[in-house]
Length: 209
Ligand SMILES: [Zn+2]
Ligand SMILES: [Zn+2]
Image (tube, rainbow, N blue to C red; front, side):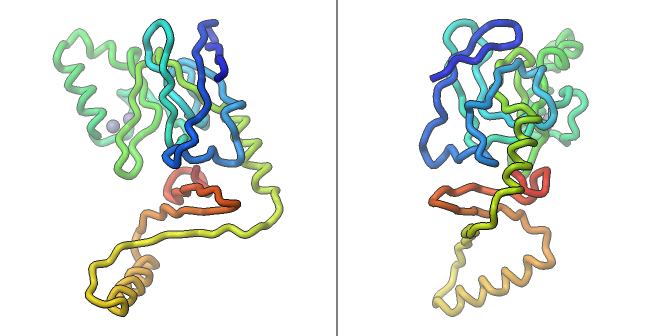
């Protein structure tokens, strides 16, 4: 358990990241020791978002982000999203009372536009967020690129409906051939020293996080 101090001096308790399989390791050997607490409106593009704290006074329960992501913050009125569930909910809130139209942009912020099946991440501007700052992430990434070559095991698996192993194998082979031509969502599991990292090659940056 550590305590992080927001730029305005208030503090949030920041417990250790859960050790369960749902909470993967941070990329580039980063640890939460490098985390800083900021308000959502102070999150900068490139910051790695690792946890959120509820926007209420008093003791705050930490919401660790299972798969930390790189922030790409925008005003909610300037989000490239074409209407995800989160944006629709915000629209409904805004339209319920016209006085709220002017409020939406200072009350809320979109920390990351939708990716795959995930909707926008919209939070209140004041919500405390634990991030690893852009510069720290960039240095760790550069250091990781310099590390010695080693063996990584890359895994993926697919379930096929078939009557025989041969039929399943043939379908798998056809599927693999199709990957070359299709825009396939490349989310792969990479394992080294027993630690598994999920790498989404579609996310921003050539290595993803
Ligand atoms: Zn959206
Ligand atoms: Zn958005």
